[in-house]
Length: 145
Length: 347
Image (cartoon, rainbow over all chains, first blue to last red; front, top):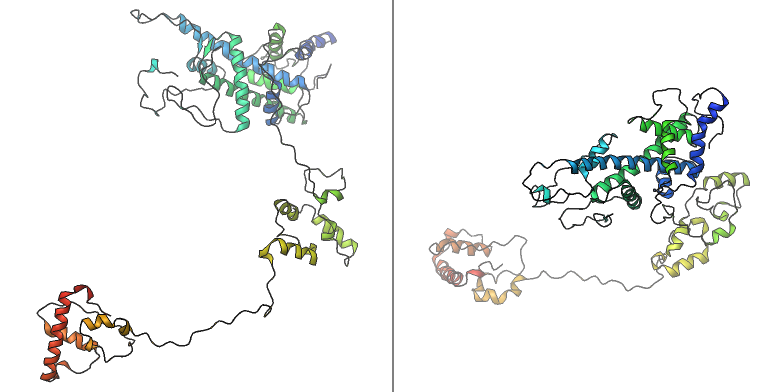
């Protein structure tokens, strides 16, 4: 699947054989190291969902490439959400009279996640409440999300 | 890392806070969703989160699956644009660049940048090169798992010729004796065979289920018919005329008209039945219903009773002696009707 020297996409590389070699080095090394690296997302899952989209490729390295790309995507979102969560924890408490100490645990909430996803173009709107129980709308902080 | 709850159930269940859990639609999606949830949890743990609620993990798992599908779709579209049906690495890189173009990557502004050293490739190389791999917890089999077809053991497969160009999943050819007629020439049998090739074998289908009611016409002979008859009583051919002696049906002769009066004789007697004893057979006319017209109007009741007897004489020209006897009878009827109001309608 990987052409050693030619680029079938048609994008022109930098002039000279050395430049071309440098350009391909990153990709070559990436593909060769993919067989040693095990992504967190299993290959069977990625293969199934790629197959559902019409992706047809017998080369396992491409599947691993997509798995690594997906893992990077999710970890970027997670780190952004972590930043938001840390910012919330570090924010000064408005009500100084409260005896509760600020919760130091790092918990992923829908609010942090929706803020992080918005930058990636994913709209995740969590409704405030579902009107399906008598406790709806009462005392939001004590209700679990 | 603590996890907010159990596995997603097929039916909505109530958790401790009385909120409904979301329902996952199909089994394949459910399985893929569950596996991706595990991966998401591992990634979150590697990122630094200690705890999480259930809904953000479900949302991220959904995002993960959508991302994979999106990359696949874009890669396929790039391959198709290049006139190929199989994707290669550059199609994948182009797809990743398109997704990353929203956020931006190194070298995006250069229209002539090399794909091999694209910003996305360098980012991925950074991820892989760090070596902090977190393998998936556990191993999963390839899915979806397709059930293997049961080998057909009917007699048709004995005569099956292995055609290389015909896929196995097509139904087998019908028995040649069903369509090859000895009286017909060979040329006409060939197109018939081709015509019947995709024919669904009802016989085979129903023979599996145990009933032979749909045997093709050309296939039956006398023995097979008897066989069918022995098995299925509903397929017994009708008996020819007079084969079985059946007793003649006796049609009852014309009966005499039932005399209601005979049956109700005791009732009528009790109420003074001399009025109706002249009548033998019920007329076709509907009998009148005796109304309770009131105690004082004796003449009206008398008129009604006289009408029942079918007398056509003018009431007002009846002689006085007859009037007296009839008057007495009318009084009796009245008295009777007052005593037993339920038996007014005697007819």
